[in-house]
Image (cartoon, rainbow, N blue to C red; front, side, top):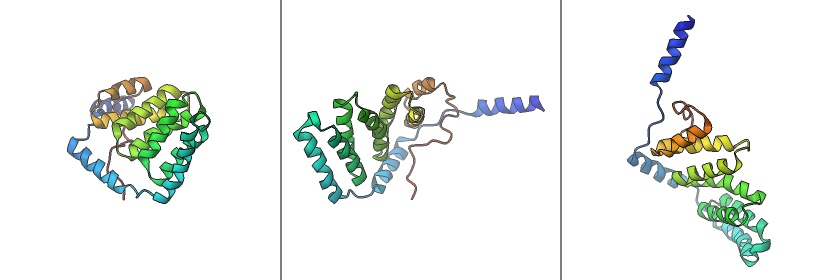
Length: 182
């Protein structure tokens, strides 16, 4: 009985393979559907968010909190591009401050929401590279690897090696590049 279980486990492993890439046509369909499913940008909120960014621009040396508030506000308003820009400002100009960790954590998810999957994977990898001891860092790297597998990107194997994981099963339940659920 034990030998049969071992043979079954070995044959299941032999049949497993890394996730197949999503075809270009399917990926374009997914990107279009995900972008169409985004809620409209709330322009009233965006105007409020802009006041935070304006305050930062007037005094960048003392405007750390304002740019962070702007980034969060823009994301809440659905202005993903503006939120990404504000978070990238935090990463670039406040790299040693606690807000940089939040910025790097948020950027992967924002790019994924915007269906910019390659950049989403890159930011998730950046987060893992800088904050690998954080509790959510491993999950960010798993997500990056699964995105890269779905893109057909060879860098997925690098991420799998960093995780010391099995490429054949890592993405069994994680498929970031898929049609949005209605």
